[in-house]
Image (tube, rainbow, N blue to C red; front, top):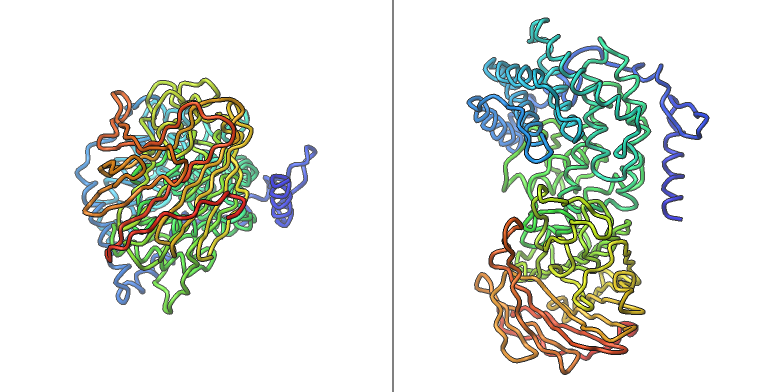
Length: 622
């Protein structure tokens, strides 16, 4: 039903745009003859026009943050002046690192040249563009490589158009067409999988093709007339994944990647054609800026799930400026200004720059429930206390793009420490890393399977690959916020029902994790948590965790016979080592019938108050 509603919303959005016709197959498409109706035939027309650049220069004298952004980008551009020529060199099956290097160079050098007028920057861009356009290919077998290189070359060609001589322009354009756009047309003709995907490949590949096609649209319109309609038909499938309230199913790392390329593609449409074809109206996109704000704990580290960095932290994200200006949301702008006070600006911060809000922004509520297909609950004790308590919990489905077997996983911070951790992704070049079907080699790697995550374990086995987990209840912004998750599908070989509850207690000063099982047959029941902290077993039912001069007590409230043990999370090459990580475990052998495991995680706050054991109630009584 939810997918049907989203599909209906997309149809309504597309129908509202006058340049569409209804095809015989029922799909809404742009009329190819009208694609370039509003084309700005001048250069530069992609991302940052000269008029917008001049406005930034006028603003520069009185805007210290913009001054910092320009300084950061010119410093980065200077570092690229001495970089050696790019080489066609694969890592595993990918040329992606080369494409990204080229893109970073083009944007930084391009901003530096357009801001200062110093030709040394333009000459270096020319060198990079001629180098990659002489490559034998841009590795179309891994189409992200083509898309990102097309973005780099498209922007470079557009920005340097008037500076380049005709012979050089023709060489660069020929490379963009042969190695990028022609390969793109083949993929659209074949309707390869990413054109129908709901995940990040959709935005990256479509965004790259849009930028490349619009760069040469006045001289070679046939590419834009074919690519733009195909991309605008494909993009709503992925943009709908932000619905209904801005979360991203593949986690924060891929939120940044997908949103950046959404911004590239839609900005290019707007600056070159004066329209986004209604794509900005798709449900959830306007709220996407809330996701990195809530997903960052008090330490700045994100809730990590799917193939994200285990220590991924909030850092400057230029697409937050794009969201702020596109949806007139000063909260997103304020959040990004705070991050720029601590980190380096990228060229895109200048392209999408928004001044700091002139008035105070109302505080957000403490908790957030994201309702997407991968449900997320985030609770905190404060927005202002860097040592406050923060908890993130996820549901969803294990077959999501870049997913791990981690339904019900939680992470916890307090006292400036991440106590309950997710290890994050392993090396993408491991054999079979993306073989995600049941029995696939992906599920032999420790970081990706249930045994490394903060989830229940039955018979010490992984969760089912095809399992889904739904939030039964989620109460936010109450004195004791909580979420209850139905995990039954993940453990159906061993249990008739499995439910997890995660709750903030004691005025948001401690965390209660409660798992309830209706076992179908006798088996071991286990509770586990991965941590960087040093663990000391003080008595069978109490463990003391210590890290960075802070302490937390873990207590077993149920069952009475339960006891803590410590297991190592370290692994041997070629997997990542996980050095310094341990597993705090409770293992209950040969359990039968109904079993309840309740763990209290209580930070020892500065005043020395220790949270006492709490009365154990069933999840139905919460």
